[in-house]
Image (cartoon, rainbow, N blue to C red; front, side, top):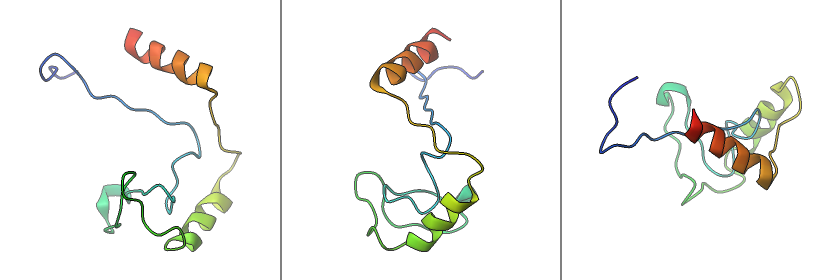
Length: 82
């Protein structure tokens, strides 16, 4: 593991199917192969990538996993502990 910057690390996580290509919240292509306008603060127009979003959902092999608030808290505590 690398050295922390100012004594901290940036960590994030997600669950299966909650961040898809074509997401209304904004997204990035793998290796930024295609420039995508918008991000979570300034999302793209909801219908802009609708076909891509629907294709991504069809290709999922199992249902998306959403955590409750309690599960999210537990996951955060586990990441900090680790």
